[in-house]
Image 1 (cartoon, one colour):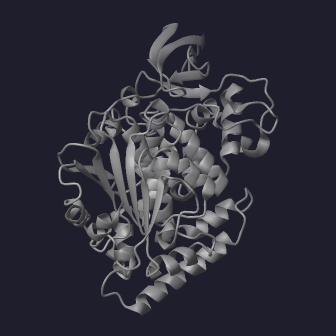
Image 2 (image 1 turned 135 degrees about the vertical axis):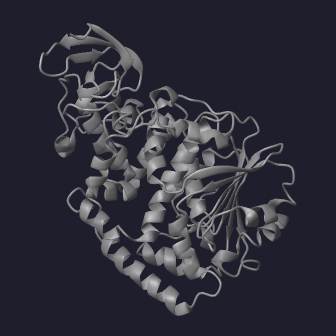
Image 3 (image 1 turned 90 degrees about the horizontal axis):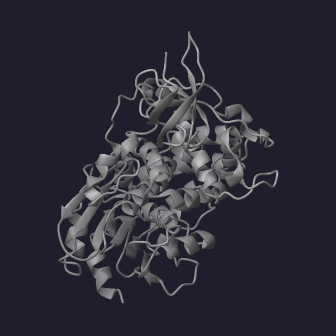
Length: 466
């Protein structure tokens, strides 16, 4: 017979708390109630940690929009064993250096549910393009809803006052099915959780979804740390050689870090655009993207056709990389938020790397103190006319955000706008449409003749920075 009290980790609230026995069974596991979150739990099949069983009862009116996907069933496994997180004890872990990030993701238990999740197929596909819904599982959507940033439910009740399945359902509804508005709400809510238990839960999911993610210290130094983030790649193996060569004169003594992400997808696109690529090959690739993009983006992203829209984008490296950039940005923001670096950071991103930075800044904008000093965007593949988004992003910058653009950048002119159904105009082709004394737009058309020239000629751009 199990004991009346169990002091174990809870897969609902991710806290180590006391669980009181409320219903004992002879043929099945005993039912417990968590003293912290009030939800009901059962012991994991493979360890002593507590798995989710059922949410605490609520008298609030349920939101019927997604009641069919609520997590009301008994879980067989705790969050460590089902792969949701790597290690309960490290969710609130602080880092002394950014390169030690792997500690957060070192697994304490085998991910026993990995095969089952992959076998789900469509859920795995949706996870790439709409991480909002993928991450909005029990304990994550609920955590974000509890922050108060998701506002009120359709009934008028503040979501933060709800509990159990009603909290999860209302949070999912507020986040939306992955549209632009819902996505930004998610970024803001996720930002509030950065550096803590909830932020690590999100990071654990994104770390597994972003291929090749790696943060490498390139050199030691003093002063603000430079972080290099690539976009399209001209070489299969990522490294920071071109970045270092360009910045060493202006920043000779600073520490350098390099962020690796989605190298195969970035190379497959960069190899078509880079030097020596035939115009015919590029046009064929562009036509293929525009065909898929126009079909998908011509529709409204609503609950009835959302899955169909997402399925049309699966396999498209451009849209996949755009989504992965947002995930990488939030993941990196969480790591920065939990790292002790009193000297702060200077961010430098090219192409889709600038998109990574945009989401990183939006997430960090919710923090009281941001460690971001200056930002350099080179040929950025992110919308320049999203005033509300840039208003939030700028909040996270203490110094200057320098946006470098070139009218010679035909890649952004045709590929970015075409693949996005002409619905977005990139910062790499003009001024950020938001007035701020922190924003410095630089027309580098006289220096940059094409999208892949930025890093090689970045030193010349740095000479002109005021």
